Image (cartoon, rainbow, N blue to C red; front, side, top):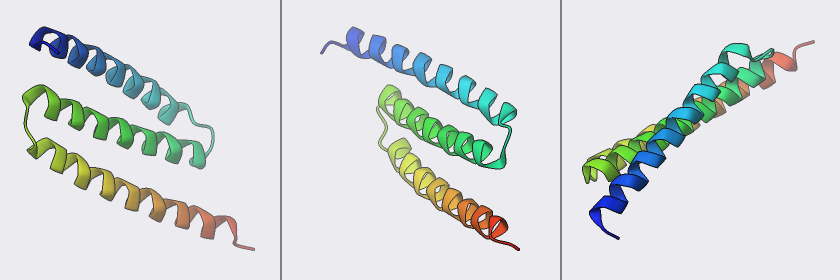
Length: 93
């Protein structure tokens, strides 16, 4: 793959991730229920992780891959914690 092809692929990936983030933010704002908003927030964190991976590829830096890994793990823990809170909230008499 030539450098020009890599730059084109990076540009397309950036546009797709940015469009997905915008659509997810619309869903986050318009979600009628709390669960919809949690799913949208989780999707947004996945898109942010994808953006960090894209940045690592564009800048040819492994540091951003490490940051993406830590960010992804922390966002997963956060979503699990929120899901447990919602579960306990729904089980109240």
